[in-house]
Image (cartoon, rainbow, N blue to C red; front, top):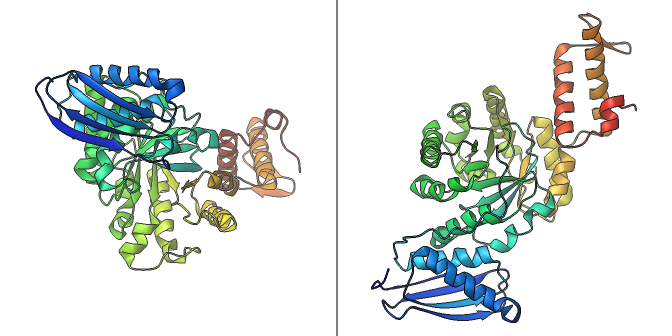
Length: 411
């Protein structure tokens, strides 16, 4: 890339910044690489950071450039992402691949379509400090967000950051999700993140089945080109009256749609009504979406609860959601995860009764009986099916001990 010129910068700077950095690059056309490094951890890791920057530039195919780096304790994959974004913003056509080595390899076979999705934690895609320890909070899924939480001017830098996070961050047992942007921006997001094997893609503001099919076609194209076979599940987000009306068609648009969810802030804005903590203004839409999801054989996942401080309100909302047929909801802060899991868990009495119903059904089947009874009550088949589903979900969520599975539960 000798002879080219341009200036670009990326990242955040200042004493208040944590686990991030600011990078400026200026291409001179001659003179090799000149690196001005100022790091919060320079005495311990200055030389390692310098070597990593030089290695990244070499892998990108960069030869003649002046680099300024102000680091506030960022990890190597963050510095690499900021450096690559700055080079791209300088207008350089990259000739190399500077993706960091995999440090957190994904599950080789991906996740199951009907896995437990009680909680999904939103993480701003351009804020690496939130991603580093996200898995420690125990969410069922983490969402690296490229849409609403990222400023329009930072979409390109966030895309590189999310790609590197997928390669390097250990999110534990959490499902690795990415919320892409709409339209062409979203297709560009897919080109960057699909090669890193995300397990679910969230599609914002979906109103027609065609939007889902377009995303699915792009994923298929990328996976075919790279020889990838791991499933990438889709979760369309319904955020308008039209989206809710077309819910069942959206859910059936691809066999990889695993769940539907709803965005209540945008939906209530579309209706022109005020969003309340009670949610009566969105009850019809949420009920319709649950019914559509069930008809299509996919999960129904509720929206987020925006008041982080209102734990009682969150618990009540989650319990009502479960009662409506939702199987989970979103969260915007780690402190909400525990409460959401509690809201979507059956009570001890409810679980104990479900286990006894399933046991009674299995004993009746072994005896060749067509009627199932529990004590003095006859149990209809729909009750048995509901009990079996509850037990399966509780087991998948780790709510049933080995002793309970082997011996049953008594009140």
